[in-house]
Image (cartoon, rainbow, N blue to C red):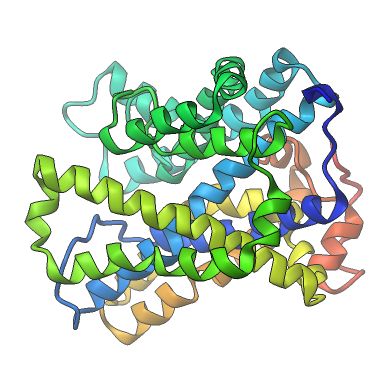
Length: 378
């Protein structure tokens, strides 16, 4: 059986959709404004609570999204070759990256003005994330997945030659960042390659093997989340910025993300088996918009709260922080509904062609009279 014959079984396909929803909602915790890089070991502070939630829930959700991207790229070879897939990824990844970063850039400049030292590279990074995070920082993920796609033939060749050596090389890179600026997050190619390996029949890795052994793997995966969280509580925050501290942080983050990917995959299984899937899957058609828009929309909400006197640690901010995933989902759905009415073409560009149809909107809104726009998937 070669890669052109790989098919996704229905339950795996459904669980991938479930995983996309829950992982994207979880990663919102990483980007809730003010998006400062908080590092503290004061376990009684609200900043420590934010730090733990961002790592325990938010950042641990990213690896499974990378795994899914690699897995789907292999399985899509049955219908689209590498060149065709990369043409499609320009529309589904790069175009939303540029447009959403442009929106965020304009809002930031309107609020704070341009930095005095802005040069050509600053603008290229702001929109394309060539060497650093773009203006809409969470969209670096789209850029890194696109770069993974460019290296897809090389990754497949290496995995077929020796899956364990390939993953070992990428693991080393994820800790030491040998690739420099090639990837903004050096752990993404590791998990992308792991997803490819799960889809390739020539490798010993298999989704079914993971599921069949989840009773053993889940407790281990859950425990793997805690070394990093405990380290944050007992280590001086300044040490993480040293060379040794940086390497140790990268290692502990990697351990937690491997554990997190298994935990979120197990959660998708629980949701699927408990007949909760329809309640989660109804939001899958809009979840990419939520991912792209949440930094902009939550930034606007935070600006209102800030003007009203809210700050980190007060009760209003605590409510804002805890409910941010649901708030982002709700504002995302409303925004999609409005854009379908007034500018479906713009919505198509912002969503990389993923416009929800009338039936999907009715399912999300719960009222068939609210989604009568003539817009369709394009």
